[in-house]
Amino acid sequence: MAEHSITPLAVLEKIAALPLNSLRSGVGRGVRLWQVSDAYLGDIGATGDYAKPLNDIAWLGQQIDKRWQAMSPEENWSRCQPS
Image 1 (tube, rainbow, N blue to C red):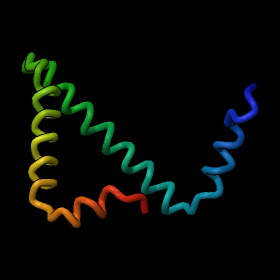
Image 2: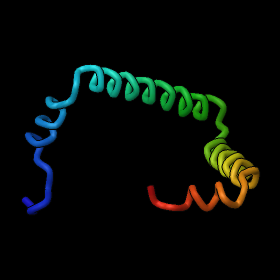
Image 3: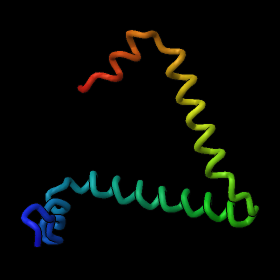
């Protein structure tokens, strides 16, 4: 194995070290994400609208641009700086 590779045992040790609430919350979000993704892809398959993902990405980009344009230059600058 490579020197910097992560072993399955190391991953399990990190998971075991997490507080139980964090683990439950993460699993719950993963399940919800799976459900939303499955419904979205099912809708695309059912309607045959295979351009929908591209249109949705374009819409998202437009919304991000609108929010960015509504900010002052100072806010834009502060969001570009590393934390």
